[in-house]
Amino acid sequence: MVSIEEILSFAKIMPAVIQNENHLYYQNKALQEYVQQYGIVVESWYPFGGRGHTQEHFANETIVQIANAHGKTPVQIILRWQIQDGYITFHGTSNPDHIAENFDVFDFELTGQEMNEIRNLDRQERYHIDYVPKHGRSGFDKSDLSFDFVVYLYFCNHFSLQYKLYCKSHHSYL
Image (tube, rainbow, N blue to C red; front, side, top):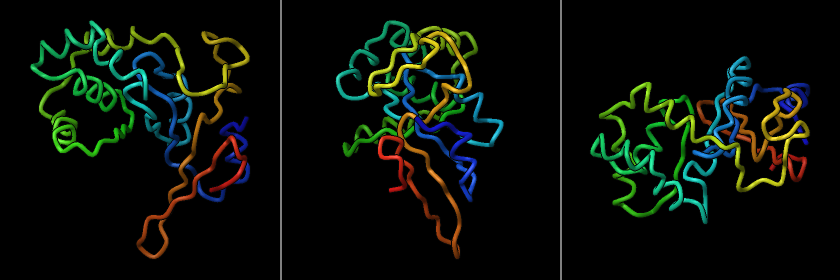
């Protein structure tokens, strides 16, 4: 397990983004708040829950009610929540209709009450990682804040954006 302190102890460039599992049922707000002190932003990995879980997220009663109130789709509500809550969200699709739907999230805002309703959906339920914090799912200790997937290290080199990926399961840069 690699912690942010370990990465920072040898990184020559401060990580700008951590890609981490983050969706309705695993919001991991503690990680987001912790890495802010380093100027690092969390990118949501599987913002719709990932394979096998998307329909469950799209059919969530709270999300559907909020979508109906705004005349939007559940997908748009989840994306808007992620953006409004300070996460970077990437959602893969090659379907032109889905791409258009995904970008149609900037003409409305969720209310404070709606944001709280979505935050209350958090069950600390991970889908894709075999790591469970040693202090339990509800406990928090900064030593539990390891990278779930990949850390992006961004830097400029002669006007080009480059990156390195650090993979915890391989303990190496890719």
